[in-house]
Length: 510
Image (cartoon, rainbow, N blue to C red):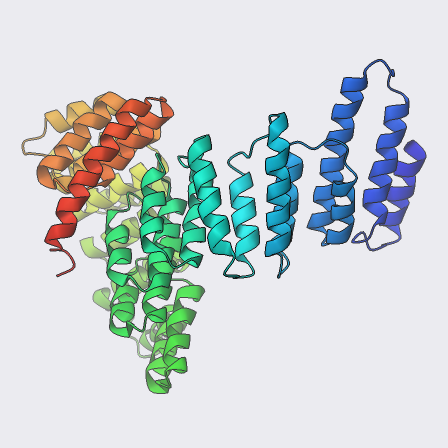
C-alpha cells in the first residue's frame, strides 16, 4: 500500500494530469490491500469499508468529469446505500439529455426500497435537478410522482427537498404547485424564499414575486439580484430601474445586469450614462473631484472636505476617508460625524470611539447623530460595555435619547445575547417601542432561540403591522429548532390566514 502511495506522490511531483483514471484506480488498489489485512471473520466491517470506498471512488470520478468510469463503479457495486444512489444523479446534472438515465436510476432505487432503502432529503434534489437539465416534457411526470413520494415519506418539510421541488414546478410552469410546495416547507430559509421568487419571476408573475420579496424575514444579495433579473426578463424596465436605484448594495453583477439590459434594447445612451455613473461611483468620480478641489485650493472648505470624507467612507475606502479627515485644517461637528459614521459603517468600533474622544478633547459638542453613529459602531463591533457607557453619557451633553438610540441599544444588547437587558431597556423607554425596536429584538430571539421573548416581540410587531409575516417566520424557526411541530403548524395556519387578508387588500402594490 505504501509503495502505491509513494508512486502517487511521485505522480504529483512530475505534474501528471490527475483528471484521469490513475487516481481512482490507485485508491481502489490501496483499499484492496487494506481489505487483505482485515480478519476474514469481520465480513460486515469489510463490506462497510468496501461500500464506503466505492462511494468515494464514484464521487471522485464524477468530480473529475469521468462519468463513464463513475457509472462503471456504480454498476459493479454488489451493495448500494442511499449515498450511492444520490451520487449518480448529482453527476448527471453536469450532462444533458440525461432524463432517461436519471429516471432509470430512480426506478431502480425504488425497486431496492423493498429491502428497506428509501430516498432521503438529498435524493429528491439530485433526481429533480438532474432530470430538469434537459428540459424534457417528460419531467412533468417525474416531478409529480416524486412530489407524491416526498409527501408520503414526510420529506416535503425539508428545505433541501422543498427547494428542489420548487425548481421542478418552475420548470413545469406550474404556479399553483410552486405555492403548494412552499407552504409545505415548515421552516423556510433565505434560499427557499429566493427559489420561490425566482419561480414567480420566471413564470411572469411579477406581482407575486414582489409580494414574496416584501414578506421575506431576511434577504441577501442573491434576493436582490433575483428580483432585478426578474424585472428585466419580464420587460419591466421602469420597475427594474426603480428597484436598482433603491438597492443598498450594488456590485459589478447588478451594474452589468442593468447596463446589458439597456444595450439589448438598443437604448445605448441610457446604457452609457449608467456605465459612467458606475465609474463615478467606483472612485473615479470621487478621486477626480478630490483632485480638482485640491488643485483649485478649495480643500480648506469644510463642507467640501466633509463631503469627500463621506464619499470615501461610503465607497469602501475608509483609509482615504481618514486621510482626508486628518488633512482638514478646520472641522465642524458634521465632519466628525462623517468620520465616526464611516468607522461605524466599516465595523471599526474601537476607531469610532477613539475618534469621538478626540472630538470631545478638541472642544466639539456631539449631537444626536454622533451618538447614533457611536452606538451603531458598538453594535456592529460587539462592544457592549462601551455602548452602554456612551448611552449613559448622552445626558452629560444635554442630549435626550430618541427611538433611534434605543433601537441601537436594543440591537447591541440583543446581538450579544443579553436579551433580558434588552427587554428591560424596552420596558423602561419613555415611549412605546416602534417597529424597528421590536424587529431588532425579534431577530435576536430567532438567533438565540429565545421563544418566550420572541413571542413578546412578535406580538409587539403584530400590534403595529398585523399582516407582517416575518414575526411568524421567526417564531416558526424557533419552534422548529425546539421540535415543537404542533406550534409550527398552528403558526403556519395563522400566517396563511394573515397572508390571505393581505393579498386581498393589495395595498402595498397599489
